Image (cartoon, rainbow, N blue to C red; front, side, top):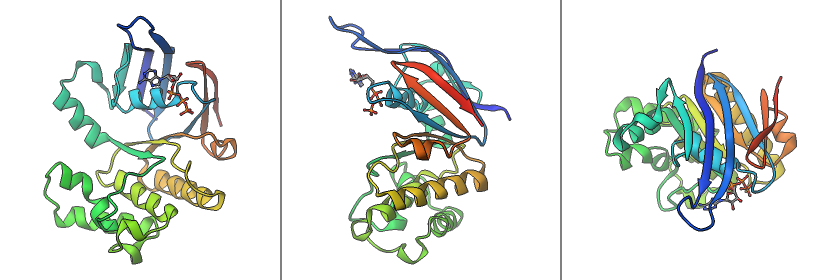
Length: 230
Ligand SMILES: Nc1ncnc2c1ncn2[C@@H]1O[C@H](COP(=O)(O)OP(=O)(O)OP(=O)(O)O)[C@@H](O)[C@H]1O
């Protein structure tokens, strides 16, 4: 399978021009194949979120290259970068950031509303299909506020898929959920991975969950400590 994301010699220094710069990523290189299901583990403070933010072009590396879908992101202008991000990458966070006063389906459609893109019948059908896939077809019109934590995270998963991204980046997507719901949400992510061939890169502190991925990458002190492909 071709690579969908490539990181080449990534260094990240926070507070570069301050008296106390801190380097948190060291010459890190990683490739992720199309349709792969990857987990990233590592101790608190090892650099996982920093890495994911750089992968998702939400943050810039101090040096090194990030290539997404064959495009070197450093060469892109801010608007080109946000287009690439919107079209290619979906994000799932520990805290789902749903809008509580909007319904499930309105939240799924929110990326379109925010970017003021027209909600065509095709988009609406996709939102409905995604809510079916995440098991919420009967809750489409419920306010996000009135859904359980697991259901809200399912809405966030559906929302991350509305643009049909090639890549989903997830930072502790089940960090907030009990263990049964965690299992269910992971099963769901795997199902989506197989159905849509979406590449998943998931940070988790849960080793048991990490073991379910095709590949486990452990970050330690800003470097790759383990890279196990099954
Ligand atoms: N904006 C920032 N400015 C300065 N230092 C930062 C910033 N963000 C993160 N750091 C530092 O960089 C290091 C790596 O942080 P990061 O959040 O990437 O780790 P992590 O592995 O995701 O941790 P956790 O599992 O606790 O979320 C930490 O020492 C953190 O304090």
